[in-house]
Amino acid sequence: ASHELIARRMLEMPSPVIVSLFVQGKLQWRRSKVLSRPPRLIPPEEQTWREAYDGARATQYDGGDLPDGIDDVRCWPVHEPGWRREILRTGLEGW
Image 1 (cartoon, rainbow, N blue to C red):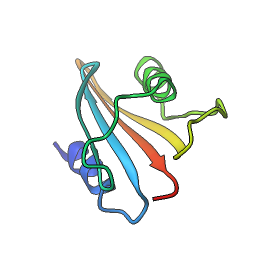
Image 2: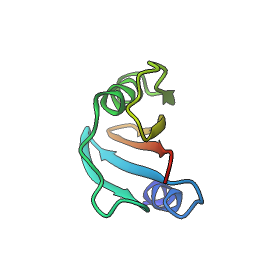
Image 3: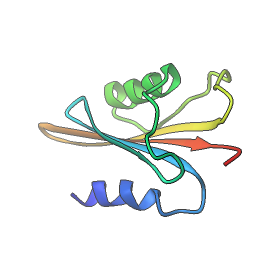
Image 4: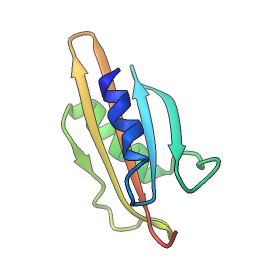
């Protein structure tokens, strides 16, 4: 639960973001402080999450082809024996 609290606290920071929490390989929730309903995951987000999930290490998207309005995608794994959770942070620009 403490990692979920960290994910929710990211929404309180000044930077506009979308935060997604994955539990056991499934999207648990997806929230934004500037969008009432965040859009579906885009391929760069899926790729970044998958690398964190599979590699059990923090990842950042470096493909360089992010869509307009998105300036960064990062994911942090929180893995324990028998339990996997990842926090995906998508930075928004121009909000």
